Length: 218
Image (tube, helix red, strand yellow):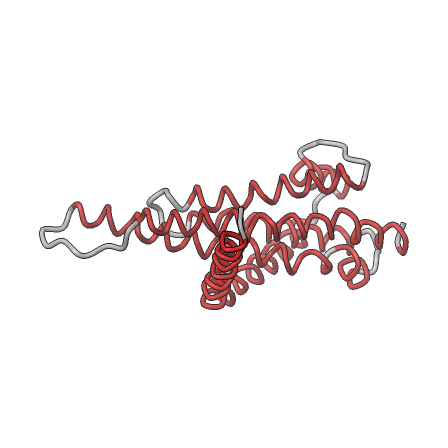
């Protein structure tokens, strides 16, 4: 690969990141608000239900870790990367189903788990601000933003799928954007933007967040 080819790849990657940033800017607050609403509702429901703490902790561990015991820092990082990568993939795959906003289900589930976790931390008499400041915020901002970016791509694809189906039943056909074009944009964004960001967030959570929790609260 010569210097000219390297420059083309570099420019293409920069353009992809810029495009992803523009998509994110348009919809960040919409999905961010969804996160907050679901978080509050899940926390309130858990508080009112007043569940058995051992069962809640076990169920939460099953939901997050799938019953898998991960001890090493690097093994934990790989596990986190795999889980979060699958969440983003689920968002994109669900967007191909012609049901509006179905692709937000992984976002809702993630936010609900955070609400339950806050309740669990509170009930174990740990300092909520300190626990989340050390164990959640270092990685969560990048991780949740990446989920939102996947939802932005998903929203575009989902809208086109629904419009194409509606067009089948219309006598007067409307112009519908190319689904292939949006799939291509989502695929490139997934490979060049989402995947690296998920990996960085996993490293932060697997090493930095875990180290801080063990050092200050362990």
